[in-house]
Amino acid sequence: LESLYIGGDHEDAVPYEVFQQLLKKFPTTREMDKYASNRVAGVLKNYLVTEVDLEVDYQKFLNKHLTAERPDKILVKYSEYEHVKFEELHDKLSEMLDSGKIYHETEWQELILPIVQLIFPRYIRAFMEAPVVDTWWGKRRRLDYLLVDASGFVDVIEIKRPEENALVTEEARCRDNFVPVRKLTDAIMQIEKYVFHLKRWGEQGEKKLQEKYEDQLPANVKVKVVNPQGMLIMGRTDKLRPEQKNDFEVIRRQYRNIVDIITYDDLLHRLKVISEQFKSLGEGA
Image (cartoon, rainbow, N blue to C red; front, side, top):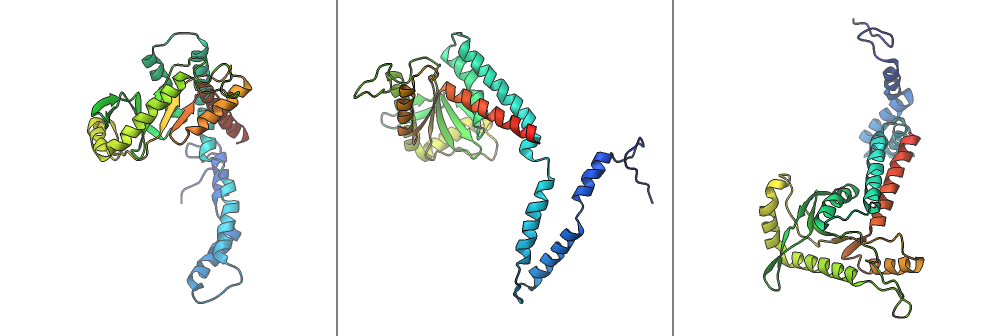
């Protein structure tokens, strides 16, 4: 027989903390009794009717006792790393927005896109200037970016620089309503047309996009064009008055079935909330 050392300085010793964790995972007499009853009930359930459903009783026991003994839940395990990651992204985006530096549109898009992909991790790839055929005129157009999720389904994203006064009018118009400015309606129309042409391109478009990007996608991911959605990143809301924000929200909801309009203040808010959520998980562990 080999000796088992618990704690101490022996080179083969099991650390005392690990031994305590092992003890917690050993089945108790009560658990063994419930397990045995559950197995017997499973064999006899077609022949006997019992007052207590022993299978359900055993499952309730597991849910109550075993789940509580797993302190290393996945979210808690990675909470510190995720908290720092999203906090740094928030600070980086905030610095970019406040710096006053003039970015070229392509440069700005390349900086913002990774942040968007981290907030929406379902997208595994983003292809710049992806082609789409204008099925009305037979012309080839180019999207800002084509997003591809883990199942191969595609969406469209347009990223505009964070200009002020790019969402709603400064003064109320048309019965005291704040209406979308030209830049916003133009951007929405642009995405709507891209989505429309992607849908009409259909199966032929799937084949063309698959051929173009096949070597940049995982082997088991095939491009699928099924009701693609649009995402528009533009504008700031930090200086809008409350009544302007309310009317902008009405406008945003009006187009939500086609285009998800996200402002840069929305991105900041989401990064902050996600970071704080992971921080609270870590502190509560």
